[in-house]
Every structure is written in C-alpha cells, then in structure tokens.
Image (tube, rainbow, N blue to C red):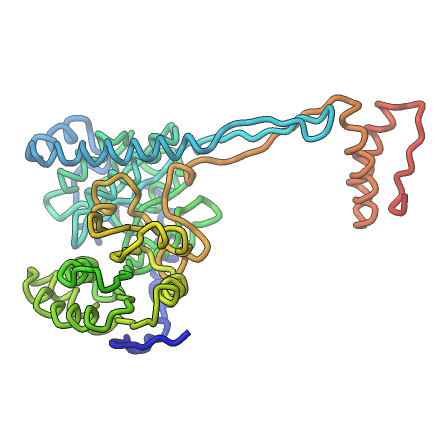
Length: 435
C-alpha cells in the first residue's frame, strides 16, 4: 500500500500525565475519607460555587423557566430520537433459555445496573447533548437510580439547559458539582446518593483520570482522550462541505485530530486551501482551538484507490468516520474500525453529536479497534443461569470430574463426584483423569 501525506502532523510524544494522576489520586483519597465535607471543600475551591449541591424540585423548575421554548423543543426532539434508538438497541438483547444437552437448561438474562452516574461537561462548552445521550440511555436500560452531575459556574450554577435536559431525560437527582469531586461524590455515594455502579460521560483530563482510577470499583463507559474525526472523500465530494466538517470537529480542542483520506489530489488541495479561511471565520476561542488542531494534529492523506482509503481509515480507527464518496453501501460493507459512521453528505458528525439518535460518547485514540461507544447495553449486565435434571447433570458431572483432575483441581472434581454418588448410588463411574 502506497500512501502520500499532503499534510502530516508533527510527531507527538506521549504526554507525561504523572502530575494529573497524583492530583486526582489525592483528591479521591481525601474525599473518600472526608466524605461530604471534603467534597464540598473541593467544590468551593474548584467550582467556586456555594449553592445547592443536590438540586431541589424548585431549582429544577426555576431553571426550566430560563430555557427558551424553542430550545426546549429542540432538546425534546433530540431526546425522542436518542430514546427511540436506545429502545431499538435494547430490543437486540433478549432473555433466552436453551436445552444445551437433554435435561440441562441454560439461559441468559439482561439485568440493568442499579445506579448510573452521568457526568455532563459544563466548562468551555455546556454539553446539553451529553445530558441527553447519557441519561436517556440509562433510563431506557432500566436503571433505578440515575444521577446527572455537571459543574456549576461561579455564582450561576449548572447551565439551565443542562438541568432541563437531564430532568426530562429521566435523571432522579441532579448534582451541581464538577471535576474529580463530582465523580467521587457519585462513586462513594455522598450527599445521600446511591453509590454508582457505572460512570459514563465525557470530561476533561482530570475526570478521565478519575474514571480510570476508579475502574474496577465501578464500571465506566470508556477511557476517553481528545475527540478525533476522519473523512473519506473521493472526487464526487463537495470540497466546501468536507472543509467545513473538518473545521467543525477541530474546534473541539487544540489537540483534537482531524484527518482527510482521499484518492483525489485536486479535492485534497482545494480542501486545504479552504480550511484556514473557515477557521479564521470562527468566534475567537473556537478559532484558537481549530487553528491549533489543524496546525498540529491534522493530516491529509492521498491514496491510490478506495481499498487503500478503507484500509488507512481502519488503521486510524477514528472516533467519528464520515464517508463522502460514491457507492456508500460498499463503504458500509468494507469499513470495520470506527466509533460511529456517517454515510453521505446528507449527514454529518454534528448530527450524531446533538440530535439524530445515535450516541456521541464514543471511543477515541484508536480504541475503536476493540470497542464501540456508549449504548443502552453498557448499563446492562448480561448474566447466565442454568438448571438441570439429575439425568441431565450426569454427563456434565462426569466430564467435569475428569477435566478437573487433568487440570489438577481435585476440589472441583469432588463437587461432581458427590453429586454422582448421591444421584446414582448404585452405579460406578470412571472419573480419573485418564478415564
């Protein structure tokens, strides 16, 4: 495979996050030992907020009054789409039972976790859509306790639109607390909250590190890095739409990679010509982020054919993958490593990020090689069960005893022996490892 980089990102060494790890470790330790009081201390220090920690009904109602009616309609529209898609996802996991051998029945059961902690960023951007994505899927999964957690702004509190979205999507409690202290409060069950069984939702490097450290004690959706996006485009693509889509994703942050993979050099050159002007036209903060991301992390790759394009894309395993090329069915069939796929110029990553129904909490940093994004399934435990008649247990017990002895696990073997002796007292069995 021969590919040519028309634009290549500088090599980025893996950052040393030892300092972040130590900060997060210390905060988690302090809060676990100091409880509510210590969490409030960190909230005062980092959030600079002294208001309600668990929002009251009246606070939620007051926030709803501040949300414009059209925005409420948009949130409800997005919620409806995410809910509909999540219900369809849930329907693909069924409880079942099957007779494995005569007399031995085994089955599967999907059980939702009891408590889900949904972190909703509210720093540089108010992630209204993250409230919709995380809370809705937990609700559809059947979680009994759903905590929405979002950082309050000094003197203001949690963004009203986030409060409204979390409430209508089904949160049972809304926690006005950000960062590591918010993650700790949900994990340790502070302020009268149930201890979270799973933590979901995006966040900054401190939130991501807290989730990583707590994984094992609680479940998490994934360990997320900077968001990334790749566009596959051929000569049929509209260069302006491609360029706008790249810039739209670059504004996430200074270290958010965007990649263009194409087999058409003229298209690539036109896109590269358009991008700087589109970045300059963004508001100041967005412009700074997009400029740095384009300068330091963006790549434009020229391939010989669509097969090379597809292989290159799979090698990158992007979080978001857009195809603006002919024969969309071929791409759907041949691409295998991505968090979420957007086929054709009629859809775009921002649709999935905000309102189309698929989830925007997705694997980053190449994790799409081995996992998908947040879904209703993440909140559900797929467990198994079995029961047997005595005749059905007989061949299972015999095989178990012999396999266990071959492995050197005599205690295991004897759990089979004792049943055979009780169920079939007048029969003899060869249960040796060489039987």
